[in-house]
Every structure is written in C-alpha cells, then in structure tokens.
Length: 65
Image 1 (cartoon, one colour):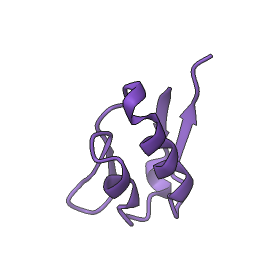
Image 2 (cartoon, rainbow, N blue to C red):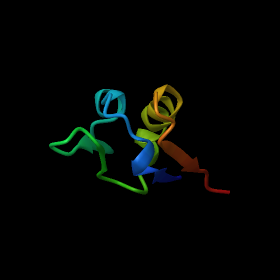
Image 3 (cartoon, rainbow, N blue to C red):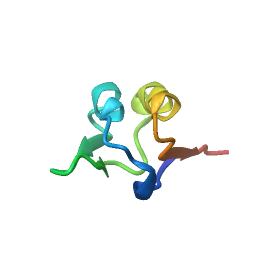
Image 4 (cartoon, rainbow, N blue to C red):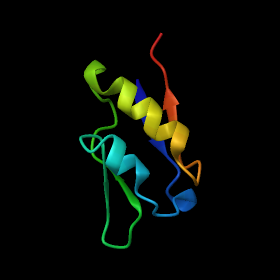
C-alpha cells in the first residue's frame, strides 16, 4: 500500500490524524503531513478508514498487487 496526498484539496479537518496518527499529522496551518507513505500492514485498516472519511478527498491509496 502506498498513500498519496493531494495537498491542495486538504481542508484541514484532521480526521486522518485522529484515525491514523502513525501515518498522518498536521502542519501548523492545519494541512495534512504524510508521515509514512508506505505504512505497515498493521496500519492498513486505519489508513483505509482515513481515506474514506477525508472530507476534502485529499487522500488516495495505491494498493499493492
């Protein structure tokens, strides 16, 4: 799994940080910071949830084959 971020779409809601704090953080201006572009399998469920609830649709996944 690889996490992709379209930073210009981020509205700063911070839901990704709440759901997957080992993968996402926020800059001082509220915009998402990607901490781990290729999270471990233990994080997959949280990352998928973060992507699905992102109000700005700023997060995307590339699933491994």
